[in-house]
Structure formats: C-alpha cells, structure tokens
Image (cartoon, rainbow, N blue to C red; front, side, top):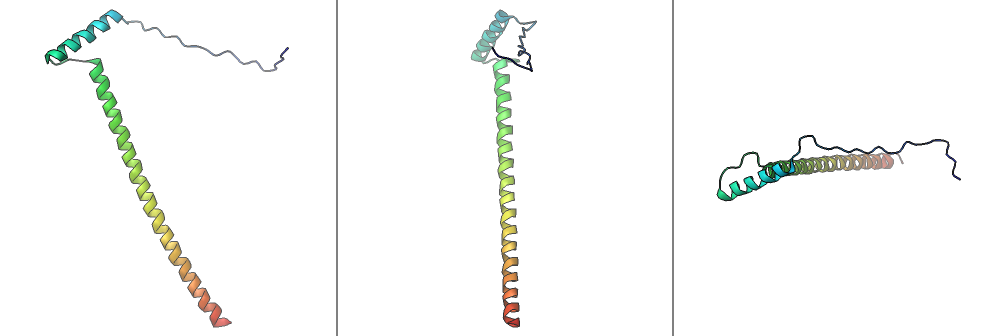
Length: 106
C-alpha cells in the first residue's frame, strides 16, 4: 500500500465549445471567397488572407527583432574590444613604468 501525507488535487481539464459556430456557414463562406478570388473579385474579410497578413506581419517583426539583436550584439562586441584595448594599453603603461622604477631603485 502506498501512504501519502500530502494529497494533490487532480488536474482540471478545460473544454470550450463555441457558442455561435456554424461549420456549414463557414465552409460556404470559404467556397464563396475562393470562387470570388478565382474570378478576380475583391474578397472582403477573407480569413485565409487575414491569417496570411498576420503571419507576414509577425515574420517582419521577428526579423526586425533579429536585426535589432544583431546590431546590439555588434555594438556590444565593439564596446568590449575598445575596453580590452584600453586595458591592454593601461597595463602596458604600468608594466613599463614599474620596470623603470625597479631598475632605478635597484
């Protein structure tokens, strides 16, 4: 037998049924929009075209985000290189001045 001191609640499931959903009407609208697009007429509120525009906008935003990240990484790398060059020059100066000091007093 398995004894437990702390009992966990079972997971709760979520079941959502849309209130105003008509599959036949949606299929008919898709057919009408497809026929209108084949005939060259302008389709209003075409779900597929809306999804395509949204996906395209998301892609542009993501690519824009990657461009920003790339630029920030480049700036960060340049800043790091400048700091390292400055530190190298500073330590070289300290090393040269200390070697002169050691030679002077020894």
